[in-house]
Image 1 (tube, chains in turn brown, green):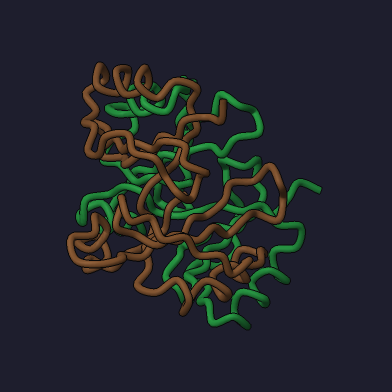
Image 2: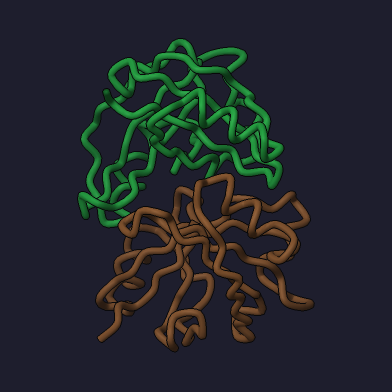
Length: 129
Length: 129
């Protein structure tokens, strides 16, 4: 689950505490997505992680969302076949708002972004091979 | 993860499809929370479920959020001790925006709502005894 904030450093430790987790202080700068991100891993290893996202410069795709107050922003799902997923998403009326690009936060695995017909923003992450 | 919509019936099947899940067509009316809710269960039994939420009458707590466009709304965590969790949340600057009430969607287990200092809305659900 992605959550957009103004400053990861300013909120991450407290944010983690509020969901019973701890922050590992690792922030990754993804220049292709123009964001900085940091994961708050659930205390339960099977639980869902929260990804804090902050804009990293002019034209960041989360800038406008942040001006609207920030907060819960997207869901991320890992998929075996990224192109097939995008084709399937399109067939259900979704729009691929950002094409597949390697993501430094995921060891170079590619991510792509879909905005579904029901206004859910989904980040699809290709599974490790 | 809670997601606010105008009409569960209108979107649930398609919403489920867009995250590779299926909808079980069960909608629960929670009169205490003034909402109707329905779960989209992840295909992976360990995955996070999406709870679709729609207002069920005047004064519903999600009405204003829906007017702002709806969408991702809250995270829900199960906790062993609800009162202790609320005390802990308050100590971190969170506000209990709705007190513990039994929830029909969770077999009468109680839920309470916290708005954290970092503007995350959390539904805490007491674990089954």
